[in-house]
Length: 261
Ligand code: NAD
Image (cartoon, rainbow, N blue to C red):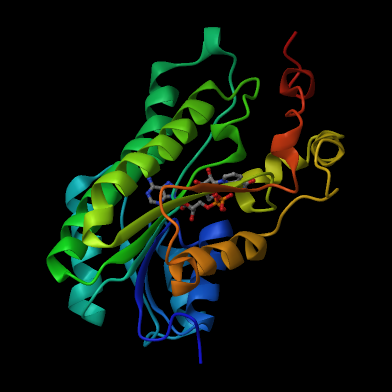
């Protein structure tokens, strides 16, 4: 028996990395999943791997409110209900503040923070109407609480996600909808491949992480299963940092790795 038998989940950014690992973990625990992503090829590959009875895809840019609403509707149209949302789509981008373009700032904030808001908004409306509670999980980052050179937009967006998680938990608790966050440290995914390829950067991160290793998507997915399931039924409003202890120390000084003086 799986921990999520009979449940229906939405996973945004589900075609790659942490999102993909979480789709796989949710399905392994018995859930049926709508994968929301801009990457239609990635969605197709995951549906082929996990089976069309368990997984359906929704091509969505989480900045597009109408598309987000369609994605939420699709959970009901295809699988008849909604219980869990894993709002994971997010992007970063490196630049010193004085050179940060407004376009790049808007992109990071738009996908990582506003996109999370739009997902919560439409998921909450449908979960309230369904009347059986639910679990919403938002992916923040270690950088919600730990500043990092060159990541002004990303750190600001993720701090916003952690606070949005608290406000949503406060508002939605009366409907038995729990809202929690996950704050990963460095996790090996396509998004971090460029960073970890920089000589010495991963070693520097690991040096600041008491457990001495970076994470894998499966590490985060296990925490997502816990927050999605009844095992965490008394928990809401929390962002849990899964970072090998890196939040206890400091982030590596990225300006040096990116050649900024
Ligand atoms: P990833 O690039 O492997 O996956 C991100 C997915 O999001 C991709 O499938 C991409 O197509 C999708 N996506 C991008 N923009 C989108 C949009 N506008 N609408 C819908 N989907 C979109 O990245 P990842 O490392 O797995 O990151 C997933 C989440 O975890 C992000 O929110 C990221 O900020 C967060 N995070 C990652 C790490 C890490 O070290 N990998 C650490 C902390 C937090």
